[in-house]
Image (cartoon, rainbow, N blue to C red):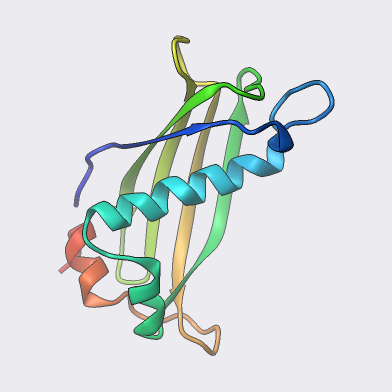
Length: 135
């Protein structure tokens, strides 16, 4: 399995924060999705390819722990790595860091399951299995 860490960089837009200038907790799910989508893209796969093959990755578990706030205009690095995979699921871990600050502001994990267009579990496409090291 590829345990390399992918680092996705963003700058927080003001619209992603509340009136105190703190990133709203709901935005982190979007940041994590961006990072794991780009992790797959770097491995040569796109969500469009996966979906065109009739496979859809749905989040079944999402855990976030907040250590300190991230604010509007902060430069943020989202570290993402695959921690485990089976024929149907992929798990990721994340660390959200503000550039120039020690330690993560947020840590998170997700588990995604592969389903078909009918919403029923199905085997991950072979292209994904080879990327995550399941044979």
